[in-house]
Length: 307
Image 1 (cartoon, helix red, strand yellow):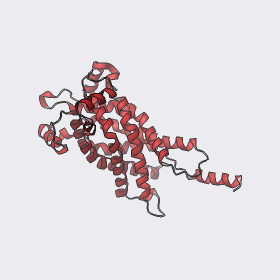
Image 2 (tube, one colour):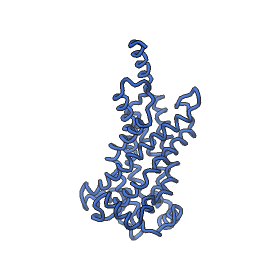
Image 3 (cartoon, rainbow, N blue to C red):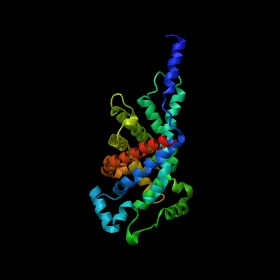
Image 4 (cartoon, rainbow, N blue to C red):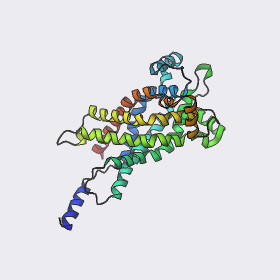
């Protein structure tokens, strides 16, 4: 093939490269995040309580729901939701924006590629990359949420809300206390986000009918791909999530860091403790992330129709 023909082929390929504006990626991620929190928060509360409570406190997810509802009513199932709900728009927005940016970095680094279809390692890079800026927002949000979720009820309640927690944590140890668990958050979300986006892209692609495009997928298909992406993420994210929850919920000075949490946990409870909360995490993973990707995809389609 001549150089001229190769150049024309490269240009043709580049013309069909998927390009989503940063603004649209950001906004659609925010819509998806809000949907995920509204659907998944009760399961997240159950996960955190199982991970941070002494053995025997709860028999499982249903027991957490039962005891929480008895102590605090229906609102108790959504305790600590204000922080992720308020913070979820920038957190998920940054995640999807950074994922799109990660893909653009791959394209920029491989200008002469023969196909615009990204490989699994390239998708994994973009997914991992998305977790880096997201962690800066996710870590303090998770810290506040975990503290609220693990405090006592009634007379044992320590905080009145997120602002009260921030005030107390800052008084305790400044910004370092508020950002405690940042390393553990990245340890969870880096590999987890890689698995998350790879799974979604591969499953979505496999479900596109012959002769159609991703834009032709119906809501149920989008929800299935999103739900399975959530399952893929939490399959590998639970152990670092346990470490993060322990580190963020413990009184100041209990642990020296993530590695110390791991050492103490393995010594006192064994490796099985790394999988505490797997049940509610999996119960949450499918519906929450099905809602998330439905929000992302359809808000993006709506924006594409407007501008």
